[in-house]
Image (cartoon, rainbow, N blue to C red):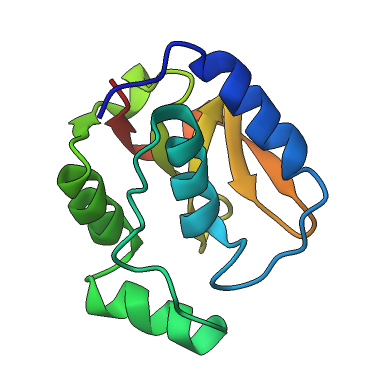
Length: 138
């Protein structure tokens, strides 16, 4: 998976467009937000195989079937051609798993000095030191 030449502008436009988007499982949740960011940067949709779920229970089931959020991201990012990266080496535009609070993990995308993750509404910033896994977008 290769970044488009104008990927920084595409990422900025993506984040601007999602600033006020309402949280919705199956449309604007952490997994699809991160996948949509990757799609904007590369033209490749790493969530193509899991799209179509609707609602919280369906989202939980998709994650459960894949052995957890980290394993889901690892599997789908590998299918899309991405390679894991050390959390401390994650770069702007890379897909990452972060610990949002003591009990919650979320997928997001590195945006400048921190990580953007889906939130209600739009997205929130999470400090980079909370990255627990990363996938490089080439």
